[in-house]
Length: 117
Image (cartoon, rainbow, N blue to C red):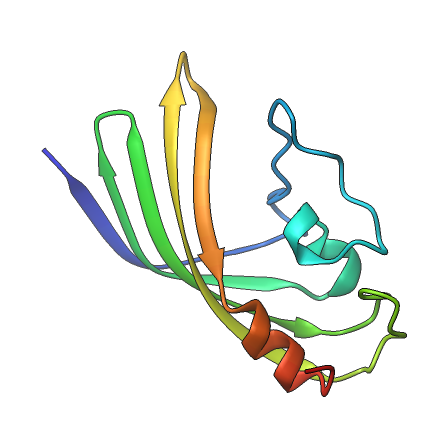
């Protein structure tokens, strides 16, 4: 049976959002959000979870990330601009740990908001 909650909020200051899974490189400040380095690009990172659904070992959530661009991104200097990025993630847990993760976020929208696309 699936469970669902709405309007959950967390910040990188209280909970780490960086995921290190087998085969995934650690965050680097110059590689951008696809590497899991959002907290380096946006030190004031905030994530508002809009929907959260759990079913057995699977968890899915939709979210909005906001923050101020303060770190280098794909060869571009910080812009100081605020962004709002929507995304979603589905995770599978095994033995109490995240075993797999799939997700998508509006990175083109982020680049457009920053004036980089």
